[in-house]
Length: 105
Ligand code: HEC
Image (cartoon, rainbow, N blue to C red):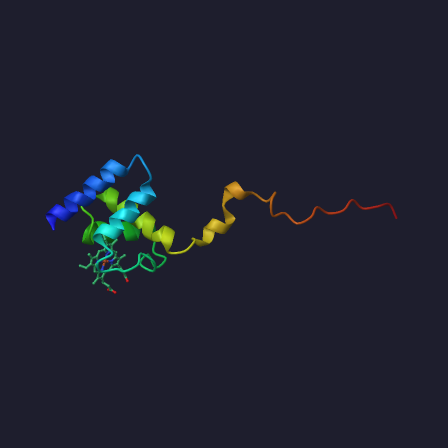
């Protein structure tokens, strides 16, 4: 158990500079998939803080890996509601056609 936990921590620590999502995915495949066949549906729309706390408390050896896993579970759990209204998207692409200039009567 301790060895597995240490391995998890090492994985996260060494992969952190690369792709966090990828490392968490591997983390899940290595340490969680035995019991949870799919990462989907585990986050259940929880707040990431609650999820992180849960993972930290129950599984992960470090808060870093718990955070990464929580983010991963959330990312595969379906798009969060606010993803549709991301500030980066602005309205330009989806703006309805501009109002036509009013012609003189
Ligand atoms: C030894 C088997 C086992 C392993 C390994 C395991 N889990 Fe679990 N996990 C469980 C069980 C059993 C539950 C309780 C399921 C329930 O209450 O519906 C649970 C519950 C959870 C929940 C809460 C789900 C819910 O319905 O509230 C999350 C999130 C979760 N696990 C994530 C993980 C993550 C992430 C990992 C890898 C770090 C992991 N688990 C590894 C057995 C395992």
